Length: 200
Image 1 (cartoon, rainbow, N blue to C red):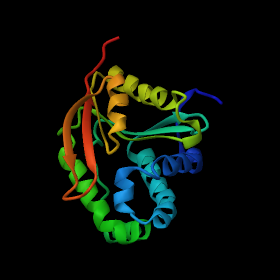
Image 2 (image 1 turned 90 degrees about the vertical axis):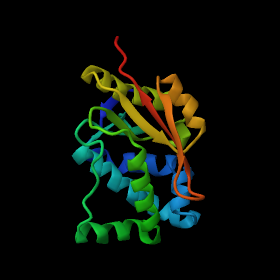
Image 3 (image 1 turned 180 degrees about the vertical axis):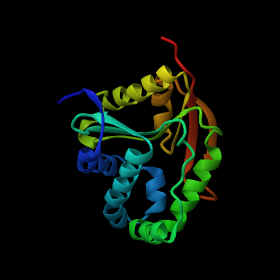
Image 4 (image 1 turned 60 degrees about the vertical axis):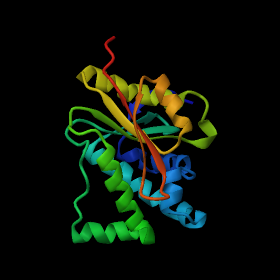
């Protein structure tokens, strides 16, 4: 396996989408959005492809050469961007999300409220490792590549996770917990973390 971390592009959409869909199949936020496992397995690949392609247009996608690990970043200037809800976009979101569209909108809105204000930061929107490749340090290496970009720009980084066990992992990468919140009543719990600039 090639462990080199590269900037991903349009030709990586299929393997990157497969990795993200598999990595997030049991993520608490995705389970809340799509409680029916069969629906979740059907919807996630399409949703992850849209998210990946959106980051190619407005953000940065980093991963291993074979997309065993994928991270999606929003650099300064696009941290708080949201897709405009034009009629065409609404139709597309309904096609992607089905009956989960209202939960997805609530999730997105709540995440936005807990994201630190301002654009002078790098936002790690999503990080996933293909299940059969987990535990090999690929996720950490891919995240560190993005953090190195933030350090070169002299800017902090931010993320949120709905998986409590990830909090410890992100601490080892220099992140600090700043917020602990829940989506509505009975929705998924999230932890927001930031990492200051590291001078090397």
